[in-house]
Length: 69
Image (cartoon, rainbow, N blue to C red; front, top):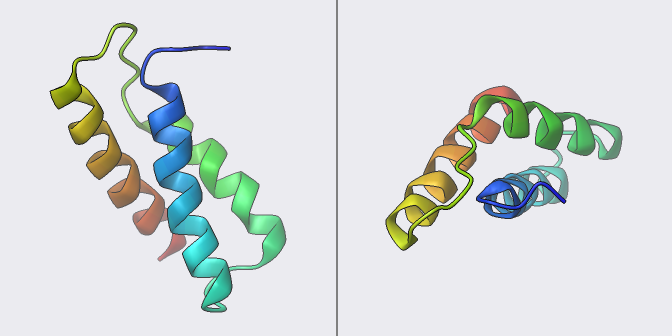
C-alpha cells in the first residue's frame, strides 16, 4: 500500500533471502525479518524514476546481504 519504490525494495530483498534460504544460509523464520529490516534501511522514494528503481534494487540487495552476513 505504500507505493513508490517500496515494491522494488521488497522484491529485491525477497530474492536475496530466498536464495540464502535455499543455500542453507538462513532459516525460514529469518526471511521476513530480513525483508522488514531491509525495508526500513533503504530510502523510500514516493515517485521514483527508472534510475531510482535500478539504484533501489541494487541498494536493497546490498542491504539484505549485509544483514544476512
